[in-house]
Length: 123
Length: 257
View 1 (cartoon, chains in turn brown, green):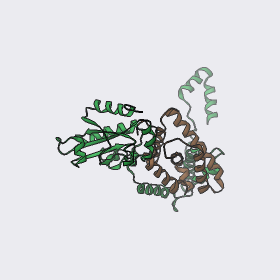
View 2 (cartoon, helix red, strand yellow; view 1 turned 120 degrees about the horizontal axis):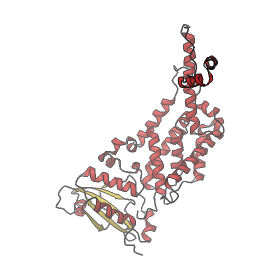
View 3 (cartoon, rainbow over the protein chains, first blue to last red; view 1 turned 45 degrees about the vertical axis):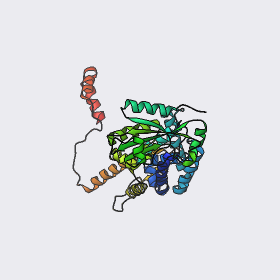
View 4 (cartoon, rainbow over the protein chains, first blue to last red; view 1 turned 180 degrees about the vertical axis):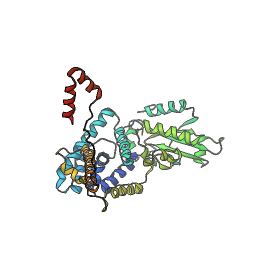
């Protein structure tokens, strides 16, 4: 605890929820992905944050997860889905940076993503 | 290296003093009790910070049965309900490396005090509600206010399944002019979530148009007076009449028709 430098544990639950949404929804049905596009992108972003002391959005993991989702549901549209997911993920990351600022504690990014994710799940 | 206290510790003292709580600050690990967080950091996370001299801060919100028993003792003896918060899971191996400090807070109005404490922790530690123990969220009434934060993993699976079922087209439904898959096909290279919204709008419009067309076929033809698509503003017509003359108005109306 102490200086707010660490995190990972307290976000375990939201990572699990994001995993469920990705595995049972976004990767299983193109219609689900299309209708709940932002929920799927948020799940990808949450899953791309490594657990541990350095809590940061990792673009290379975002890309890998996007590839997985596109490959799972894409068929012939894989490229198009991949581009759409990457574009939206980029927009959301930029929006987070605008809202929280670059100097915000990294946990704040996860907390904000978790909040948005649950709101989308509610909708 | 011995840092007197960190920002969180100072802030906590201020928060408790301003909230009018009775509390006792003790050196030592937290007592056993109900965990406020679902998952804390594993002890190894704390090692480096402990070496840097930061204290490990814990909070024990104590609801005593007998107010004459000191807070710490009441928790240790099991004579109170103790709600324990700490970012790091306490473990015996931390004993000689770290400097734990526990804030024992006297809780009289359980719901109110826990709510204030949860809000404070969530804000200062940047934690989402979903990171907190469901039992405690339930006590403070947050599960009713925002049901999703209290969803179990099983409930999320069911919810996602329900979403998928809802999306599956039903057989008796009239043929749709644009499906979700079509939305992907018809989108440009830069397909985004906006495409989805647009596709939905288009689908809705086309559905309405199809319905109208179908209604035209099924219903007997009835003569309706022709209504111009856009109604001309009488004030504008009056202005045209004044400046351009009656013929101008007649021509304009004929042209508009």
